[in-house]
Image (cartoon, rainbow, N blue to C red; front, side, top):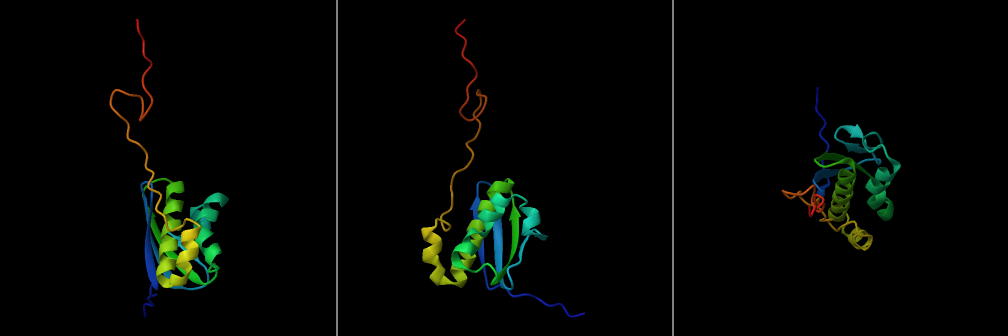
Length: 134
């Protein structure tokens, strides 16, 4: 049995909050696979699907490439943001002419906002216990 290996045309890494996505771009017909599952099944929400496919819609490459994505860490929203950045970086490597469009739409910028840590002696990161004078 001969094993057919698919060659990756380019790859990109995306990060958002605590999520990390590795995106591999291949020749194909627009299939997006996330952790071995179809993208529509993994990101069940229409809003998350919209976020993931934004770079493809802007660059008109929706049916041109296949994407194999492994994503780990964080929540589902952070993972969608990480996938969007990874797809944008992979497209920018493969098609450098799309870099200006991706950058203009803000898809090449890593969102560095993280959850602030909880401090000791407090209820949360910012919330304090109620002060009682007596």
